[in-house]
Length: 163
Image 1: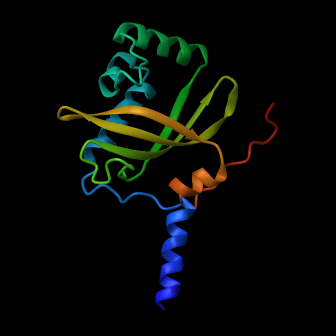
Image 2: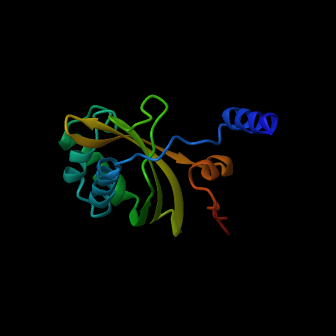
């Protein structure tokens, strides 16, 4: 039995499929992401700026970043339809979520180039800035392996008649 358990643990460590533990208190990281997406959904880009770091804004001022987002969202007719924020998890360098956490989210949206809408599997990194949590980066997952790692049981939807 010890050999089997050892093989199992070794397999977990090398598979890359094991995620960090859920944050004991994920209210800060989740709320930061919810506030950010809610502001973006309402096209309140000046408000959204309050929930992101300078890394997320590429160091732009509030006015410049908000203007760029407005141009992108209005020009592309972007509409965020829904969000499904999952439990925040520790990161490789902060397993306890003391100052940094990964927050998975499933975003449904559509724009003028994709009127059917799309499902995006996203992983946000949130960081603590003083006493406030903010969104620091975002990665959209495109491969089934990445989606299964962060969103077990979810399927990447097939797009029909897309050009």
